[in-house]
Length: 332
Length: 56
Image (cartoon, rainbow over all chains, first blue to last red; front, side, top):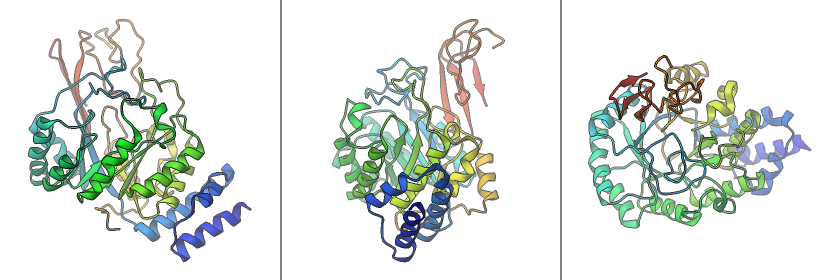
């Protein structure tokens, strides 16, 4: 039976070039652990067929850290929790440009500036609109922004100001969201995602697995992502942060993470599926396996408030896997 | 840790509670909060109390 599910999925995605139904993904999600490597191999084949061999490398920078009024239970930057991450105001222009140059020198084509806030006020908007062309011109890299919930007018201005990609994560399924965030709604997040698409910015819309959601809710999230239609989906795995309500959760097991990377690729065959936060503690020695399970992009080096592997380790992994580095776009 | 304050919690005498993949959060010299910038290939810190700087 397991082989039948895998064969049918391969036929659908590789021969018929049709997306899998959620019921088909559910069948695959229930395969025994012993079949996960085969599932991963199929996801890799699907990625090559639908998205090509190129891997997109991105760097991220927290330009305004901590002090966030929202209560996302996974986040160490919420002012509502007593965490070691304290509020740091907007970085200086020179600090941001230096970080962008450093990222570009590693071969990255995308640099995302991230702010811990509910949504940008006018002063923040003006800073973002001043920074975006400066980063692009001085570092020669595409600029992505993650600044929370946008009004339609703000989305218009960021698009006109040259923001290439806007990040706004759904994080989790609509049915689970109220258990991890109470200060804003899932629908508010979705609406910002739709605004981003309306104004023509590329939408980066990520997920965070391991917060206590069920497998069924992960499938629900996958289905919701199909409706929102991002060009990029960063896959985060919970890194339980001290002081947050989710600090006591255990990280996702490595093989479970591989299973869900593969399922997200099979469910979203043409998307830019990016390795993001938590992969070091979740996957440990299986990080290269993730690259052959459907991933075709990664955040290189460090994250917003925590450290990752060195960029050299990530670039060596791609070299070892003979995966070329380059820019990807929503026109896959 | 030579200066006595834990970079994870600022306590004196803490055996070390900073998670493996975290930059320092507190000054090992005076225990003050650090302004930390984490960028792609490293981090920089400045103590808000004593001004001590660090980087990696």
